[in-house]
Every structure is written in C-alpha cells, then in structure tokens.
Length: 202
Image (cartoon, rainbow, N blue to C red; front, side):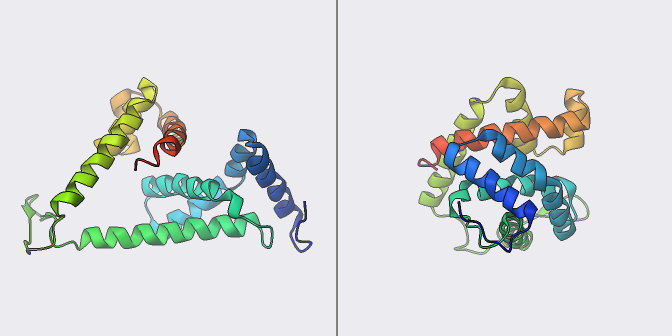
C-alpha cells in the first residue's frame, strides 16, 4: 500500500480507513471517516449557504457522493482535501439549482400577500415524455421509501414529501430535536443503500 510520503500522519490514517472501506467493505471504516469529517464539512457548508437544515442535507449528500466514488481516490493528496472538494462542488451545484428555481419564470412565485403569481411563457414546460419520466422517478422513490422501517418512513415523508423543518418534525412526533436529526441521518443512510439497488431504474 504505497502512500505519498508528504501526507500528514492524519492523512495516512485516513488512507488506511479508505482502503479498509474499499477493499473489505468495512462499514466501521466508512463510519469512522464520516465521524472524522462530518462536523468540518457541515460548518464549511453552513458558511456557504447559511441554512442549518440544507447544510445538514448537503453534508449527507457529500458523503454519499464521496463514498460512491471512493475507489477513485488516490493518496496523491489528503483524503480530507478530496472530500472537501466534492462537498464544495456539490454545494455550488445546489446553489446554482436554487437560483434557477428562484428565478424560474414558469413556476408560481409568492407575493407579499401570500398569493401566487405565475409568469407564463410558452415552450418552457416539460414535454409529456419528460413528465412521464419524472413521475416514474417519483414512483420508484416512493417504493424505496416504503421499504424503510415505519419510524424512518414517517420521518422521510415528513421531511421530504411534506417539507417539514427538523423542529416541526420534533413537535409533530414529540421527539427531541437531536433524536429527529440522528434518526433522519440513519434513514438517509438506509435510503442510500436501497437506492444503490434501484439506481439502474432511476
């Protein structure tokens, strides 16, 4: 196992964990890598977007993407450098999408009175085939969510289908906020694994 001699001791240990994760499918190695960098990634993303819920979601997404590409990592530079790059690039893409959503001309926009206003321009909607594909993806996603344990399923439905905040979910289910965040974190891990099995269909 050749490691770049310029790497710090911490980076060398990270590479040992990466190899255990990739070569042996060691779940503890994945968990330890996440534990080592979760807070740093979260605070970096929070600075970029200034929204705790979105930063939390994007943190999970960044680890999901990094772990899916873990075989591509080489120890020419520190694992943390590679991970932070994935997280920041993913966040920049997310910000771009949010801006598109905000300024989309064919979606309703809220007015100060709480009414919705739509600017209609022809030719900007999805064509029937795109709508069918989108509906199919939603259907597959629902099937995946249905496979979760009941308590995780409820959390995911409240968070992603009803778009509740973490605080609203805690009130609704009468759970401590920390428990809601921890269980949603687990639910997303399960979803990620289930999605791996369904990704050919999505």
